[in-house]
Length: 93
Image 1 (cartoon, rainbow, N blue to C red):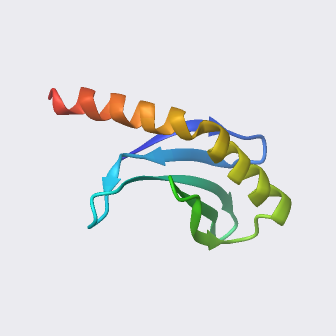
Image 2: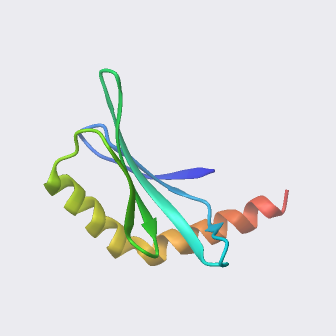
């Protein structure tokens, strides 16, 4: 499941995922920036806590990508906090 946290003037929508677990037990979240274009989307996905780019598909500029990385770095604790909050609310159903 993903949760929207921002919509930008150029049409980019930013979402974060539920917390996942890797085989080694490490928790991660994916932050996705996606903008519609004529035939599909520009997509840029960053994984936390590693800050690795796991998908770079489309026409985001280097400056936009740099901005996205800064947003993710500045909001890392926010993403984990709210993913845990949403996860706890969903587990009650």
